[in-house]
Image 1 (cartoon, rainbow, N blue to C red):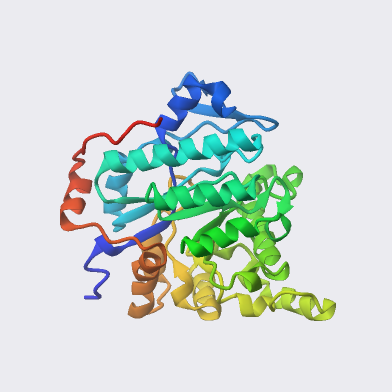
Image 2 (cartoon, helix red, strand yellow):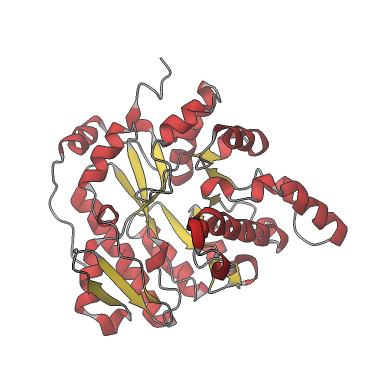
Length: 359
C-alpha cells in the first residue's frame, strides 16, 4: 500500500476557513475599538458589519467550530487543516489603525483557539491589514514569530487595486524574510454587478479575480523582485494556468516588463480544487505535481467535499500523490504531522486547557 494512503495523519488540507468565536465576542464587546458591528440573527448565526460594505453574509455554524470538522476530516482521510480567515471579515476598508487592531485580534484569537483545541489537527494562517503595507509586514512578523502561525492569507486585490501595483513591497519582503507562504484568496471581485445569477460570483468571479492577481504579480514584476516568495493560488489557480499561453502572446506583443507568464507557471503553487480530473492532470503537467497542494475550501459547498478522492482519482501516480497530499505542503508551511496521540485526541474530541485570553 502507498505510504501516504496508509497514514491519513500525513494528509494536509491547505485551504480551509475559520473565524475564531472569541474575535466575534470581543468585537461585540468593544465595537468602537475595532470598527466592526456584530449582530446575531434569530437562527443564532452571527454577521459582521464593516464601514462602506454593510453586513457580511451570516456565518455558517461550521465556520466557527472545530470539533465537528475534526470528525469530518477523519472520515475523509485528512489529518490536518490550515485554518485561514474567511475573507468577508478581513476588514481592509477599516482605517489603518483600526485595521491593525482588528487583524491583531483575529490572529491572537486564532492562536488561542488552536491552543485550546490542542488536537494537533489544525495550524493557523494569519490575516494582515493589507490597506497599510508597513503594518501588514509588521503583523505578519508578529503572527509568525510570536503567535506561531504557519502562513498568511490575503485578498486578490486591495480595495480594487491590483496586488502588483498596490505598493506592497514591504509586505512581500517580510514574507520572504519570514519564509512565510502567502495564500491569495479572491474577494470583492471584478465585475460583481454582472455575476449575481446562478452563483456566478463564486463560480466565475472568484477564479477570474485570482487570474487578475496572478497576472499582476507576474507582469508588474513582483515575481522578479521576490523570486523566493511562495504564493499559493486557490481554486486550481483560477484561469491563469489555462490561459498562460494567451497572456504570453500579449506579453511578447507588448514587450512588457516582468517574466514571461508561461515561465511563471512553476513559480506559483496551486490548490487542487478543479472539480474535475482532466484539469487537475493538466495543472500537474504544466506547473509540476510538486507545486500542487491539497485543498477543500471547507466549510463552503462550492468547495471539494472529497479532496483526497479527487487527487487519487486523477491518476497522477504514487510519488505525485505523496507530494500533493502532504509532503509539499508540510515543507512549504513548515507544519509537522500530528502525532498518534494528537490523532487519537482528534477522533475522540478530548480538550486541552484554554489558551490565554486576548488582551
